[in-house]
Length: 505
Image (cartoon, rainbow, N blue to C red; front, side, top):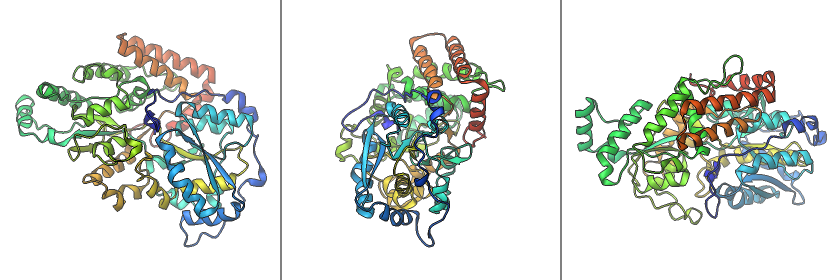
């Protein structure tokens, strides 16, 4: 996801998702666009012995007579090559329904969806929604509730084969289905197997610390190992680690690490607690780590960090799943990925959970239906087909579209495992992450909280005092909570906090 912040023809700025919340203005309009004639009837269809993909195709054919067009909003860039080049043409060939793809930069998607909802023109049928947006969009009325369609078309069974962390955390609001988790965005650690296996480094580490050199599973170990490797390898042009530190990405990294340190975002009175000892430790550790990372790491985004890793200049890093594919040299000849530096480390990369063992489910996408759509039934059938076991197993292997594994079957897919020598280990690590991942904070006006955090991270890199920065972030969060309404926001937060991926354990 996050287009990994790059478009199809080049690279975007690396800024995180920027939303403009119109919730207060549109709550009164929550009934608009509800075409009761197009709402799924309670009568189930015959699904006996059929896959979810087959059911969707058969049900869509009569709806698509005459060449109906389904309009779907998709992230601009590599992600959109899925419906443009593969799934859209395939759906049309199987059903007769055309697919129109509206490409929108990720920073504008929330705003565009809300604007269209307010205008009520029916311009959008299906949507890609970042799961953290769901409370805002569902409360506003912009998303169609999907439970009746799921029951009518017998899809609940296949929904259970979506990996538990995505299924249980990225599908519902107040227990009702508003989207199908469709992109396994999660952070993994990537490390150089050859470096950790070097006998000279093993010997030197053992002599210095009295234990074996191993891939770190805690943050204190990460700091110790990272500094050791930089000291030992800097003369060879290799640093112990590198990381993207640009604030848009730092937002996700902070959310993950803060919780792995034991932090909770709010107390019982709904007061922000990011300025407690856990938050301070994260900021102080970041400053310590930067000292053994490449110069200028504070400005590293997705691409800068990727380039350093693929050139073999860092021994460890953390990022989304595409790093694993790019490092393996898979897709090296794909035209759409010509901007990716040639990997110098193919067959040398290992995969592990980040220290702490609970990685961030950073952003991701779910498939939803617009409440203002004039083609709700057909739009629903399209997203069921896209998300189905059969079709999603093809989509996550597309050589250009960046949809990452999110179903149990994706992690054991024999075709995927055969794509490069270590693909089995890569998928196994993603499968582990799908069991322990942490859900992005999801509130009303989430981006105002995230923007305060992004600004704080910028100040950290500018040299301001970490505790003062965190106190300002907490004050800004409290101000947003007061603006939304403490009781109203508390209800949303408690619903979010009750999910299995909100906090470790």
